[in-house]
Image (cartoon, rainbow, N blue to C red; front, top):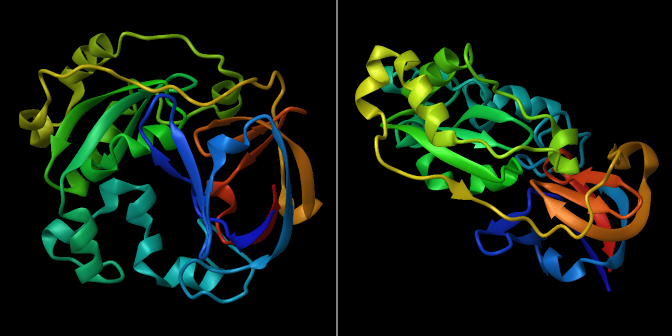
Length: 263
């Protein structure tokens, strides 16, 4: 069967194991059902996730114009400490920024390739951890806005990583850690403004991914250069599709590409 649509990050369900869905405008594909089956992908065009035009994708699924103009791509998205809606200061669109920034946010620890600190809206737990391919995670603080989460993350980055090694994550080259101990050790480094929001009593969340075979030497598929690819799907972790020949495809990193999917 052939499907065609614009790539956006796979939707997920927090079940045992994680369930993945590729959502096109007119189709809803349960990716777990395609494990151990051949699939073919072909690049047929581009569609900016903001303006909808067929333009080259610059970053995060947006064309260059939208990336630099639209509030959904403001610098505070990637750098929460730059948030200013709590001060009533506009970056690109204050109404949008208030809607997103002035809601509960979580600073967390996640273990995917290593223990890292991160920020997400409370409504995105555990989706954010799934998207990062974390096999365990725990909340550190819950704050009322994005700015407080951002400055907390910045403070903790001096003592714990803030990046995931995607190759190690996909190889499942990971070690279980005691995140409760990590959280307790980091408590003293939380900024004064966020100390009252420290979460004293909670437990680790454990996540299990639908992977039949992990790659020993993952090689990333670039559809912009290769145009088409066919392979046997053997796993899904984070936002990556894992194939039997050790090719991996980051769906989220390719948002905005229009593909033809043959399954």
